[in-house]
Length: 111
Image (tube, rainbow, N blue to C red; front, side, top):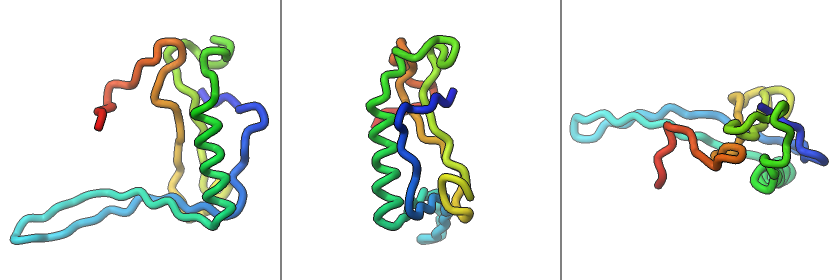
């Protein structure tokens, strides 16, 4: 569920976020990998950084359970042509820890 953060920052400036699919061949073996590129002008990068800090500092546990149920995570969707450039891919930035349980989702593998 996406809860509006009180006084939440908007993305200002220019921000372009997209996935690049890579392929390389070395000694007959082909490797494939994806990279996420985040590019912006100073205003765009600073506002993105502020948004990340706001999500990190947001107290999910204080939000009414009807708005953000226990076990859900705060997130913000960045849409091409609205919050980010038209050439971007849609991006969801969110918390890894679930409200009141602190659990991470199943696909997460720690570094």
